[in-house]
Length: 326
Image (cartoon, rainbow, N blue to C red; front, side, top):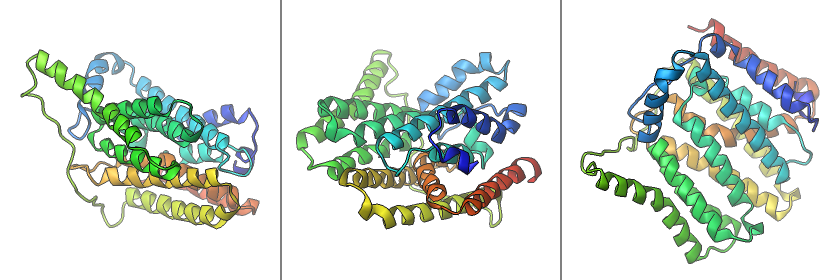
């Protein structure tokens, strides 16, 4: 499979769709229904409550919505990486990696706030990574700020991605106070409209937010979740080292984009530790940047049998966790 997705064949988009369906077929047979829970933002909980009377009649609809989100994220982010020339040759390995690692755990295939947020964060990364070529940077930063504000409505700790935009400006070019101020205004704008609506409907003092608090995750000494996270961590570290080893051969803008990718990963990980209740589904926020580094491991491994072996070992882990692990 890695040999197929190493090429830039347009047919690969369709093959990836089938590939992802096969990996996630168990959740088509046994669809997972999202539930209202405290760590979710109020907007996501309201959305789930709104659609539940209709979609629960057809449980598979939850799977198809979740899968379409994951698939479109994989394809769009893969194309974005190729347009930014972050790999020497166009390929579909980052998209393959995203579909692969999101299949490790059931929680990453349930329609959730982080799954929706990932689509918004991909849009933000696309805009920020192209800021130097943008003729209207202030409007872009304002819009990115608004999106961050909306993400916090879905999952409050995603508010930490405001730091991503600020540090991205520092990495991309000399920061201008006016641009940072415009970005902050954009972040505040959704909250201003929310406060105004709550005030006008006399709900301002009864409204409450939850989900923030500095904590650390805990796992059982031996669990499929811990094994999955360790495997992903090892592959990510390997990808980071490979990227660093070839960075001297890359042009300045490509090196900056890789720094932005590392920053994206760091902020996504940080968001998980300001969540007062840990659920493994929220680690999905980090899997978009992780997939690029894992894809780079597959791309850099020139020995075909070694790359194939790594891929099929990951597939075997997925099959074990889905069908045999209890």
